[in-house]
Length: 86
Image 1 (cartoon, rainbow, N blue to C red):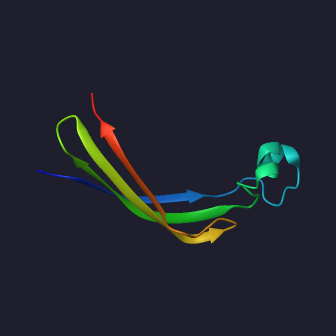
Image 2 (cartoon, one colour):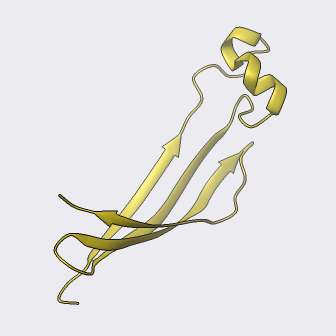
């Protein structure tokens, strides 16, 4: 391994339609499964690293943590993947 890439990440979500009970603003599917509730907002931060194995293949890994959260889980989120570059 000659090198790797490291990136800092800041992510945010701010709701546009606050306190709206209207089905059209939230969406029928979201009302049924409760995955995305109204007034959900957060600010999160994290890091991602990319490590190339060869000139074509490599590995990505990352982690995000919530700094501020409302109506969203504040648990850490992890990700990992293998990439191919043409």
